[in-house]
Length: 306
Image (tube, rainbow, N blue to C red; front, side, top):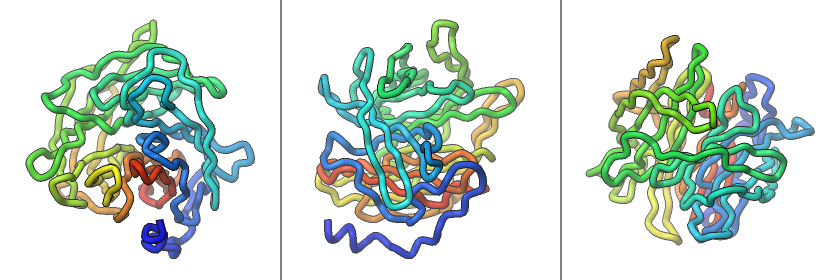
């Protein structure tokens, strides 16, 4: 732990806040939120400002696989501190949750995704998350392993992005996109699926997960995290990059344009970032790590400006 403390820079400037979301942990330091492999951060979803407006609430998923292990927690993140509270899962238990995203214009409702492509629609009330419905993703490819999910609302339409994480030089990530609607009983319904291959500019190596999470800014920028994982005790490495843009037409069609040379926004040696969440109305991204036996950490970084 001393090594990782030495690697964290304390020189990050205070983040620029563009809207109503308060600065959350704007000191640029990592804050520990989990102590072991069962409590890391595999995905984050913004829930709302903290009651004192000095921080934010977010939900985060755990990639646990056994019955009775925690699946979901609530994070309260402020400058200098991060507090975690458990959320009770009410319904069929997922195996290996890797991502979660708030559903726009549906307060308290979320989609959560497992590594094998099962999407859970949730209603979160207080400290309980109730499963409304669940369904597989469309167009799952051979060997796909999912760690990311993002929802995009533009022109009155909704779209969803997700990605097979990829594996090293021989398997780039596959970024999928589709229009999204909901059946009257709650099931997510997917429209025509498009695919794009993506290779992370950093990190590199046999263990590279080219996309470990996705977030989309209000202007449609696609922000992705990438990571390497050498085992449950590391070493880890990760980065956050500007991957391209997404737009949704008034008719609901989805267009993804990936950058020929993605811009690396920040690198994070010794950490495995599996969650990136652009905070609405802010330049900040909330980042989360799943560092296996070393636990989980969160921090903010100014990656989501226009």
